[in-house]
Image 1 (spheres, rainbow, N blue to C red):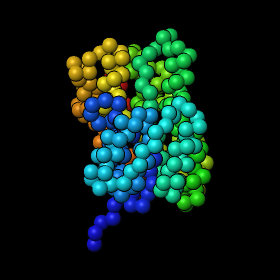
Image 2 (cartoon, rainbow, N blue to C red):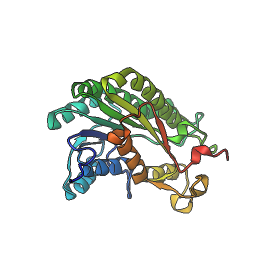
Image 3 (cartoon, helix red, strand yellow):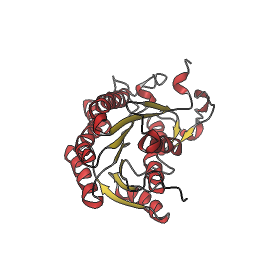
Length: 265
């Protein structure tokens, strides 16, 4: 008997679906993997060229996806994203809140404008997207929300300072806890992934912003496994939480960090 793909017939919204530079970001990897598993993927990104690159990868493999260009810092865009998913594919089964702005500034150096920008994309947008998607999921009998948070919400970053970013990512955990409890009996599961040291274009850009050449820095020593992660590690965790294998999991914070949060040094 042919094995059925894990997400056959599901409609998945993935925000930040394009990579911010050379290499593979988590949103792109999640989108490609979900499409491989049979999902119809709504690729949400602020930049059309980035989303189109992910679309090309999916279509080259015979998958199904569509692009929605949206600036998630604008509250109204969140309802637009969900409306587009319903118009194009008939509903929403999975929401992956992946889009984020990285910030490597201390609280002293964080301007009010930067703080509001980071919170708008990293926390308010997931809140508003969830608000728009949950009624649609309930109509379809349930669904799954996966928030991509960060170990920056759980432990210090060695004095580098990323206060607004850490606060926004911690907020995603609180959002998960409340929604998981409030909507579990409606068939909606809500979980978080906390990536650690993951080799992505976004991390490289954040390091350059902090005046560090990412090519000269090997952070694998900070993990218990002694290796770095990559975007596929996060994507596989998202598939597990969003798909049938995670059917009894909700309100879970899953670090994908090679054991970094298990270390005391």
